[in-house]
Length: 530
Image (cartoon, rainbow, N blue to C red; front, side):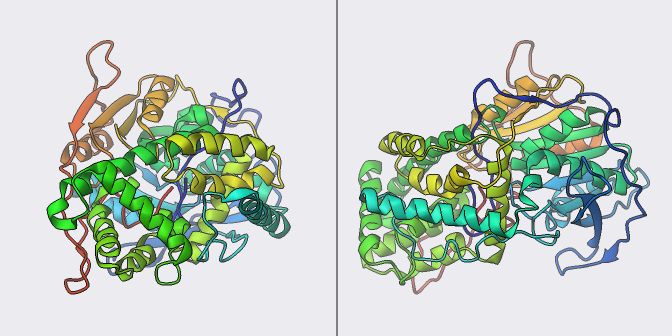
């Protein structure tokens, strides 16, 4: 899944038994000679929130196997270290694929304990194709403009129109970026990380990646284990499912998380007055969805837009009070205005979302094989929808361009690793975007890694979200390089309790929108991430 209105996260498809074995030896052997780098020129680009922020750009080969050929420009940001002790650059990535990371340097530096942040140059970057990097992809502006046809096909004609829409998007990407699409993929982006490392003059990098950024980090570590100093991975993509199978796993996980939200609304019946039975509350939500088919709220929130609006609640439960208030106002007061406002806040796509989606599809469709026979998608989607109806078809159409992508797919790399230094993995047990199994799988693949679990947590991107236990593990690791170790034979090395559920706060026309608690690094930064 991926964001309509903000950014995107990872999900996907792996053909069983096919892996590309990336070299796990010191880079340089057998690689084309890299071009020399002039010193980076950092200029002030301060914001009110981050007055010390600096910006720079670096060029990387479009095709890393042709280092003297055409280049792309990567946009970087930095919060420089201030302590006498310098632990090197800390590259940070928010996920996607398609997520802009330039804003993360300031956010992460401000969120870490000052003593730890002061010892690093915190480096944000827009990956190739994204944001301020050049070229920035935008295959078909306005692809998500409301009101879209209902995501759940209503007969053969509705399905045909939706398939044509996915074909049109894929064709638009191929027409506009035919010379670029073969090089928009995770391995190329991982090789860009090494370009950034060399441009920074560093022998090794430290890395903090979220969501899809965990997969990007794992690929880099496989390519260059000797160039990793420390690596923390938060909310982990399952490398065994890249990318088709991971998306199906998301469909089930988001449906479960949506039911968690419905149960929470039922427990707050005194506020939202939607009933005390979670199943009845959920039935009311689907009746609302049905009603929006014939009369979209505010002329722009139909069934698909409703799903886009409520999907962020699966990423972060701090959104639940506002979403529940909009739900209640529509059902109980026949007032669509709060629902429209919630859509504009969480689900509506803008130019950044168009760019993010273009990169998301470009990376995921190129990274791994997807079914090219639409009948496979149809059967799988109806089968999953029967058990998990919340967002299965919405997600299918989000990824459907991959069935028609104009560039052949690559084979996913093997990211198993017995050479990288200890890696810190952080994972919530009830994360919907990157289900728990992904954290366990990568932990098993990366020898010497440490798995820290938020027991009962359902948010995505668990550090810097108010859980001091998780934040302390991350800060201690970045400060010392030491990871927690469980008892012999234990799968999990440390456990943190989940934060309490959000408190209800009804959305009313008179009182205005409820305030939202500060969330993880992904909340508010990416908005609607996938």
